[in-house]
Length: 360
Image 1 (cartoon, rainbow, N blue to C red):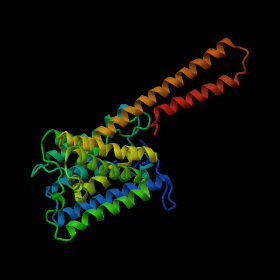
Image 2 (cartoon, one colour; image 1 turned 60 degrees about the horizontal axis):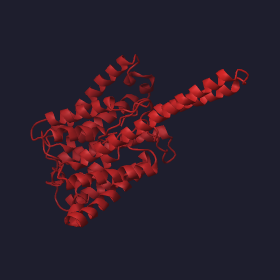
Image 3 (cartoon, rainbow, N blue to C red; image 1 turned 30 degrees about the vertical axis):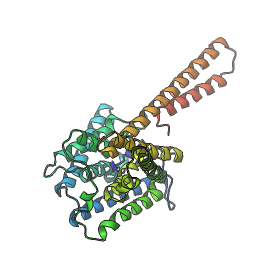
Image 4 (cartoon, rainbow, N blue to C red; image 1 turned 180 degrees about the vertical axis):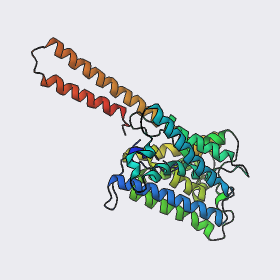
């Protein structure tokens, strides 16, 4: 879990694949910044535990070196890209900034790319090859720097979903299938494991990341698209809902779709985001497009980014028009008190600043 986040200057949360500045309400008395850091660490720690258990119990068919290669690639790519970005903008790399000097600050900075590497390694099966995992992680981490919101610097596309979808589209490897995660798990643990992972993830998102509405929209939308497919295409509704019982669905829900960095902050927007992802997934399934989970999330993230860009551009135009109008009134009315134009200019400046931020 694309999962999952790039707090950078403010320790933003990422869940997978991962995961602009995300305002998360403090939980259990925690400040928002502390809640973000705690959520980021909990997501990374739980994903690490799931990865280790998945290889030890045997359930994951991926090579044991795959998560190591993914995590190492993610951290290395982050160092290189952040160094280049700092050099281009004549600033100090953020992993060397004073904020990183606090306890765990540097570690928090690299956790998002670490999570991206683990998620890509978890959902890609390339036999004995590590190149698909390495490529997916490179694409995902690079996407954080290439596709980002103006002003906040937050990523537009879910890193884990972007990297995984890119490699799957290149047909380098097979897609993630539920059986691959519990093939060697003895009964009844193969049935118990998915709901346990899903339950713990829901509790984490509800308590720390504030992304429970995304999960609600995603789950409700997935059920709705299954019913619609059953009514329109003749597919059994139970068959359409069958992926919900698998470990792949639980892991995708917890670590990819609910990435705090690439999902909206408002509750209503979160529900719409989750439902839209499920709807696009259902459409891709009807069209016979494979790997619809990751492609649907990338498509919805891209549409959201485009909408926010158009909205921000409109606000910047309105701010410039307000500034020009203020200047014109000052020119034709020289006797006007100087305080009024100054206040108007300040308002325009504030509007222009807000337009460059992520208007969630």
